[in-house]
Length: 391
Ligand code: SF4
Image 1 (tube, protein in one colour):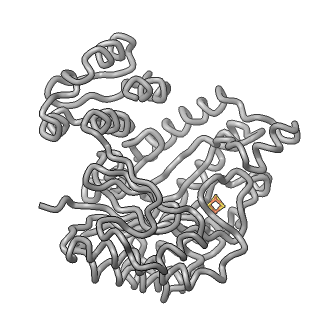
Image 2 (cartoon, rainbow, N blue to C red; image 1 turned 90 degrees about the vertical axis):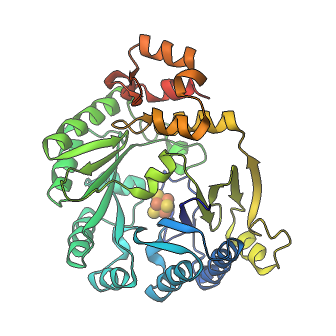
């Protein structure tokens, strides 16, 4: 039986590169968008035919980059192609990422009508000096307008991404951002600590002393503050960096990302996209030109997309390790012991006895027999230390 799968589609175009960004994205080549959409359509069709149109799909996610640089006919073509070639669940979550500086009400209404039912805005912060430092193309009033317009366009399910631990950012500035964001009633929030990645302009500025290195302890205090403010406002942390609004009737967690955290299969489509299917991890060629060339050729190996650059077989033990590492990010549900045991034929405590015992004795993990293993409160703050034990 074919497993229920998710589809990630990468849109690598941005109007301008942000100073901290190390994603596979490109500015100044928007003239290639029409050809890229054609190539995406080919790759989706390739996978669809590989499974004779029978692969069940529960979530579709257009990430980037800036998917909202695409026209609505382009976004419609991509989604229609997925629906033609896969068995998409009638309740599928269909998300796209958006830059608040690229959307207006009419555009949002159109993409909602096309079938996208979840939108995620990269707001990042409310302070103009930090938006400028990060090289964002929008200001905070654009973010407010985008969030309000999303609701007017019937996007009940919308997420806002924020970044904390910015150079020179104070706790008060972070609290101001949180308070303003909460006034917009998002259903979901993703909060990430700024990473200064080598090769980015921001990394260079920090090396040259032009920008101060963010303070890790202050960033940890910001994370604690966010946990407290969000919980007071009706949100719960279901993953280390992700918060959903508590609602009796609806589950506002990101179903697409839950597929990753449950270590379940997904197809990666587009330049630089990664996939995990049938015990194999795939990585596509990353450049837009390379991707267009790959998709212009006739597929040689019909078991693999022509865009795939590398494939790694995931052996059983590696899959067990990965299931622990990603599952422990889910701070509420943790790793389900019955699910793990059904999947691998042994329980987590049988496979990782020493690691689990040690982490429990250090107060970093908690286990409820036959139910779950998850991070303790202390473990949430030292998550990376815990995950490394399963590498
Ligand atoms: S908008 Fe997002 S993907 Fe594009 S450059 Fe900025 S951070 Fe990177």
